[in-house]
Length: 131
Image 1 (cartoon, rainbow, N blue to C red):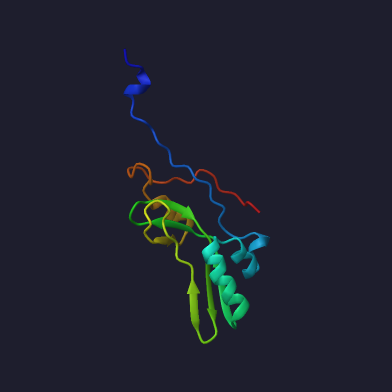
Image 2 (cartoon, one colour):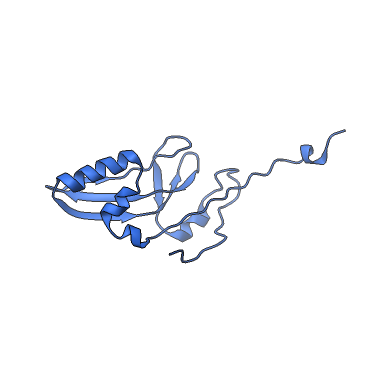
């Protein structure tokens, strides 16, 4: 005799929590870089400490992989230094290794397919000021 749950399709849910925006810890570019993964942190720290920095930009956007549909929040940084040289973060998908694209507006998240089933759309269930 087969149990009922063995006959039902397995339901997989995509559930992630993202903290977009800035906190007081992110106002300073050096602090923002300090929270980045090792390779990015080392590259940006070297530029900030050893070069003439002309301008910086930082953010914590949502990224989406165009190949596998994975959705991640990653730190973004851009620094223009010395004679106009530019260093910018690149987001690589942890699932498939391809480059990810920034989701420019929060409402665009609801246009993305679920990365688990590819049938449904992502829904935002809660939004709040977190800082």
